[in-house]
Image (cartoon, rainbow, N blue to C red; front, side, top):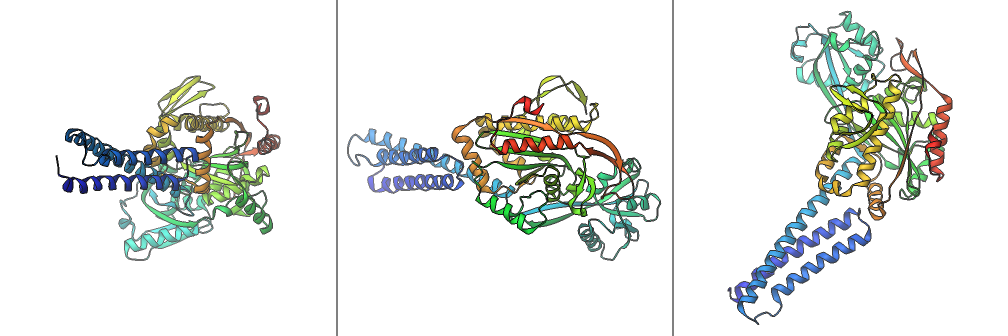
Length: 518
């Protein structure tokens, strides 16, 4: 048994470490602000009780009683202090990562990456950008000038010399210049080249050309969360100011709101500006626990706010920024769109894997990309869910059914997240990693904390209903591809009006039934 004068400093040191780490854990818990007050108070009480117990075991009856009993008591105290210290440190790290992720996806400074490609013909001799130093490069004159200019500067820095550029008005003229060998290479945002393959004339672009190199162009945009909500036709400052004041004064746990969910058409490891393959308005009423998912087909032919209202395919609006897609949908439905959440396909897949997969009810059996889906419930991992959500050729209604399947997948994710908190706790690390760099929203960190706290507090289920507008197909010139016609879907005004009416019902506190959707 250690003498008192040697043992006492050790006991004080052990207790100090426990107190410091428990206090830090309590601080992180309070700072995170995601647990209801009753749970925070209970956690702090437990931490305080453990410190008190350690004190009693270490110091009660100091110098009195049998040596063996005091020795056992001190050993137990040291073990308890070590367990509590390690547990508190681990909990603090978890809460730190949660807070870091929330701050990242809700940051007011969002870094978006445009991936600009240099393309040559398939049989071109050049194997690197250095081999193409003396080439003439085609660029677009009327679109994406900032990204193109930065890409050209990057190439010139790598080569140490100027390059020859030849301007063409749009992506189709730029691609045709390469086909005709008027230029030896073209520089074009990969978001535009992916749009080219939607056209009949350039459907073979990927087969006829080769990507020589990629230039990531990063742009940090300052996003004010109170300035990103968009109202229908809010071109005037008074209307937008009114909407911003509404957002600033709202309580997200009580007041209904609309979120634009965008699925970025990219598999990169960073969120890119690109076509939006998923375009869903999610109306949420936290009081009634009602959610409406309203899908709009990617080919809907609507005014493009970035093009002064010229008509374009909805999917192309995402090339010009998520705010453009958001504004286009706000105008289409004549509804205020308060927030957005954008995830790319890589994040979509990893998120579903992180929550342990989902179960989706498919209305029909089909096969796609090596996977078979049966009619009825299908348990899916991330890769299967992604194929399920992207497939359209297996259905007679094509993109319309794909939109419905996307909403089925989102509904399954909502049910999994809100209905299985234990699963989330066990896989928190994977869930957080899946969101880093691949999800962004203009909901504030306080908004997210409030919603999480509300869900944990009452754990009530949500009534999720979905509705998809459709239309008729056609061929039209678009703002993004003015020189040739592309497939578009004409608006069904009755269905659009019904979608708007359903949003109004949610916002007014009504509970939707299947008959409302049918």
